[in-house]
Length: 326
Image 1 (cartoon, rainbow, N blue to C red):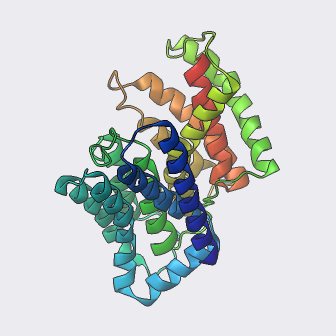
Image 2: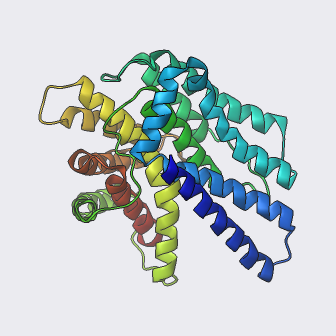
């Protein structure tokens, strides 16, 4: 808990510094900017704190001790929104209702099993995963963080926190591997699987008329790094948590037969691929095929390292390279 508080204090200090630097350059309402940055700091603080096993263990202990606490704690995630919305004048009852529903449904599905130790995939797990994924894919969480424009970055962080609480705290699911910082072995395995995926995916993508290799004249090292970090935080980690840390993890536990988790990996990869069918032009089967293949390699990194940062590294690099050159 102390580490979590230190992270929060540090991020709040960074938010204050960022506000000072921004106000020196731009004429922006300081109160609105302060509300925006402090809201980001609170969510990022929770986002990072969930990587700490001691923090998760404490939340788990409270959830087991009190049914009311188990049900109520995730609604503390409304605090950053209320701070942001009231501070910027962007509050709306419909936005608050969306957030309450997004927390309540997966929490309600997983709450009855809070005294158990999750070992196999059950119908509540599947329903909770759908409740986490469908609103994002259907764009139901848009129109919530609307100042100074509709800000997407809040959505994936909020989704990770709700999903992480449901499965890591309520379900006590082990082996999720929710980590953000890489070790040397994570980087090595991530790059090896990136290279192996590229050897297969680039020719296949060109043959399917999905990939169109081109030279990007505007890319810089800073531009690539910025794009990579954005994808890593807002796309790779959220999707890896859902499809590898939760789904593949549970499938491997539920299907003990076969070579060391292979069947669970393959099923999770197919589901991951199918989740891309809704992209235009619908159904986008080319995207689904490439995403399924990508899911095999992301899943292989996760199976090897059991850390989401490792598969997230491969995932973010694939998306960044695709953005600039394919």
